Amino acid sequence: MKIAFIGLGNMGGGMAANLVKAGHEVRAFDLSDEARGTAQGNGCVVFADAKEAVQDVEAVVTMLPNGGIVKSVLEGDVFGHAPAGAIVLDCSTIDVATTRALSEAASAQGYAMVDAPVSGGIAAANGGTLTFMVGGTAEAFARAEPILSAMGKAVIHAGDAGAGEAAKLCNNLILAATMIATCEGFKLAEKLGLDSQVFYDISSKATGQSWSMTSYCPVPGVGPQSPSDNEYKGGFATALMLKDLKLAMEAAETAGTSTPLGQHSKDLYEAFAAEHGALDFSAIIKSL
Ligand code: NAD
Image (cartoon, rainbow, N blue to C red; front, side, top):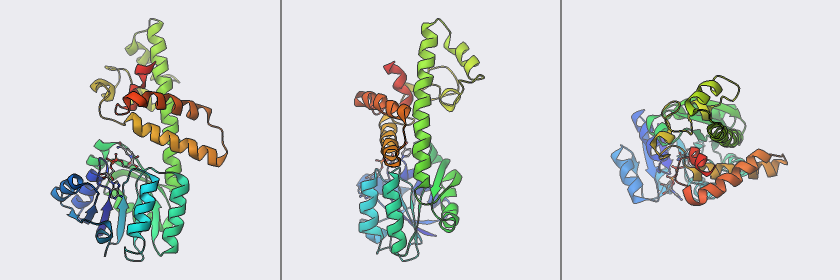
C-alpha cells in the first residue's frame, strides 16, 4: 500500500521504518533534514513537501508534537491534496476537541479518519510493539487496523472519533497518580526502616500493586529492569507526561468533571519538569 508518513521524530522515525519492513511504500515528510535523511536510510521515499508526499496515497499517518501542528498539517497539506477516499491516521497525542473537529472536517472533505495515539515509548516504536487506542467509525477502524498492526502489538477500537485520545489521556492520568503514590509508598517505607526489596515483595503481591510498581519500579535495583536502573534516562520523559496531564486536565474541564488527583499530579509534574523534563517520569521520586 502507498502510505504517506508525516512526522519522523523519535516515535515516527521507527514507526515509518516498520511500515517499510511490512512491505508498504512509505512516502515520508518531516521539517527536519536529519529526520528525512534517517527515513531515507530506512527505505522511505522522502519528499521536501508534505503536499507532494500525500499525492496518490491510500493512507496518511501523522506523528506530530501537538494539536496545533496536526491541525495545520491536515488542513494545509493533506485535505484537498491526498486523493479523496484516503484514510488519515493521526497517531499523535493531542486534545480530544481538536481530534473530533478534524475528524468532522476530514469526513466533510471525503476522507476517513481515526485518532490512534500510542502507549509505549521510543523502544516500542522502533520494535513495532506499540499499543494503539483507536477512535473512529467501525469502517474506518477496519481499514486502519492492518496498517497499525504493522507498527504495534495491540490495536484496540476505543469508540467513535476522539475515543482513542480520551483513552490515552485517562490512562496517563491514572499512570501519573499511581507512579507518585508508588514513589511516596517506597519513600515512607524506607523512612520507617523497611528494606525496599522486602516492601516490594510484599506490596507487589498485595493491594498496593500496580504497573508503576511491578513493571516500572521507581526504586533502582528493585523489580524488573526499568529507567530507575539507568539513572532515570530513556523511558517516558517527564515533559511528555506533563503534556499528557495538561491535555487530561483540559479535557476534564471541558467535560465538567472533577479530577483532584489528576490536577495535583499535574502540579507536581509541572514543578519537577521545570528542571528535570528530560528524565523519565519515575524520577519524580527524587522530589520526595
Ligand atoms: P518528536 O519531537 O521527536 O517528533 C516530532 C517530529 O515532527 C519532529 O521530527 C519534527 O521535526 C516534526 N514536525 C514538527 N512540525 C512538523 C510539520 N509541520 N511538518 C512535518 N513535520 C513536523 O516527538 P515524538 O517523541 O516523536 O512524539 C510524537 C508524538 O507522539 C507526540 O504527540 C507525543 O506526545 C507522542 N508520544 C510520544 C512518546 C515518546 O515516548 N516519545 C510516547 C507516546 C506518545
